[in-house]
Picture 1 (tube, rainbow, N blue to C red):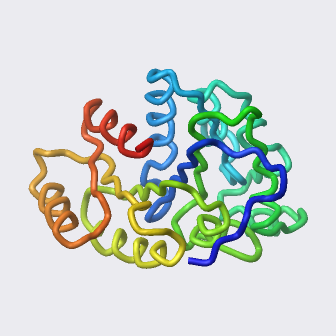
Picture 2 (picture 1 turned 90 degrees about the horizontal axis):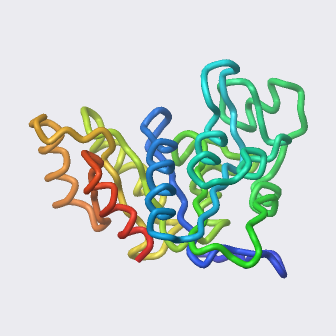
Length: 229
């Protein structure tokens, strides 16, 4: 894996976790919210960042607002207003649609201003799926490579189609992460559903990454502990 050093003098959390998804609407923001609240209950200092967000105006809280409520920060600290794009497209596409300037992965990464002194855990949530554009010059995989996190959580649905989506996403992420960094979460997991159980069993047998589920508080507590080592 090719590494890029952080900018000189940059503040950085003691542990950086990036939350990515197999696609849109798989529950990245909900999962991030749950993790941040659990870490805070463990008396860990946290910070959340959404490098850029696009959204449907009036459709409810933005991702940054949800993350801010969970981390205890202002929403404009989680995602600066200059990176708010009120069009439901990938952020660089939304910027182009709005006639606003484009931006690079370097600008996104350098724009992540973390608290000083460093917090215990910093969480970054990307937009869309791992191959969704995050900037004019790269996608979610490229952003993960740029950020060099200690842990990457891939969130996917538990139902039909998730095996293909998880495997394709992990194949892409493998080139941006080191062994042991990746974990998979099957969100909306219902143990009463045979398909959900079969998907979980298959993925646990086939994948080198840790595969966890979100079916209740105990599962989420276990996930929070796993990501903080």
